Image (cartoon, rainbow, N blue to C red; front, side):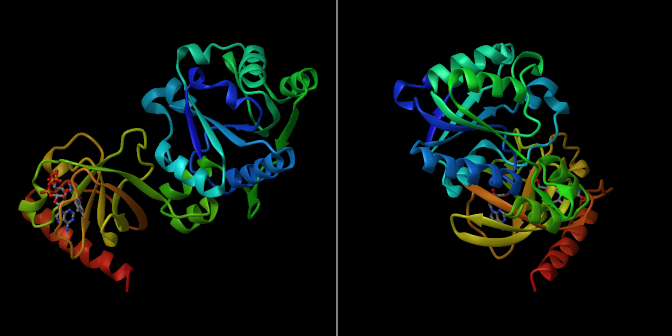
Length: 306
Ligand SMILES: Cc1cc2nc3c(=O)[nH]c(=O)nc-3n(C[C@H](O)[C@H](O)[C@H](O)COP(=O)(O)O)c2cc1C
Ligand SMILES: Nc1ncnc2c1ncn2[C@@H]1O[C@H](COP(=O)(O)OP(=O)(O)O)[C@@H](O)[C@H]1O
């Protein structure tokens, strides 16, 4: 799969494609439905299936810290899109200039002239351009004028509910990982590089691999049983997503203590699959109390895997 970063990197050889546009946060089953339609159109027209996505996601650009927590960071979106069989991703830097683009210019200048779109698929609620003034009706009109097909995909539903990133976040927040997994079509994982922490974990007897959450502010908080993909294979463990109030921490981190492991993970990329919530994070009066509780957490997490 080819990745094109930014409008300025679109070249003549990218002209002629079948396109869909969106955030694809989670790359859930609703997205997969759209993407499979895109791939079959691409085959029919013998053109590359192309996904245009935005980084940061527009809501993150506008609402900053108040934007909803992300389900998947760009790297994981790209892995999932490649697995589905998408040929090309165009990742647009969503900034103040892009947000100001006139909807007609976006369609005529970028989609038509630069990308030579022959078929465009968008979700049923797609809005675009300055003030979200562009909509499906405008796309249809411009498609007729500029000779490209326009398709609107109906909502993908499960048990009478529309599968959406919001519904998945809600399931995760309610601790219903099974429902989240059913909507995602894959398990919920948080991934990232292991960074240095306060080196307190080893003193407490529970070293923890710390993952910075960056854009993927977690929709989850608390202590969880986890299954972790590392370069040493799949390992099990227990994780805390929180700011460690007992040590007066401020920043939310994902910290994982792996069972039966004593290697060095700094700088390595790990994917943490959340299996079950064990409890909420707590502020303890003493470190001894925290250690006793983590011992209980370890036992409870191990029970999840028997
Ligand atoms: C299973 C588990 C549960 C934890 N629960 C809490 C908690 O309830 N409250 C808290 O303040 N810190 C909690 N922590 C975080 C520890 O305080 C933290 O791992 C420790 O301070 C080490 O930090 P470091 O990796 O930066 O050295 C937990 C850690 C783990 C592994
Ligand atoms: N069982 C284990 N689980 C997690 N990390 C481990 C384990 N054993 C060793 N490590 C290593 O130790 C580091 C964590 O030790 P810790 O004292 O908590 O330091 P830090 O505060 O930098 O995270 C991890 O990043 C990893 O490289």
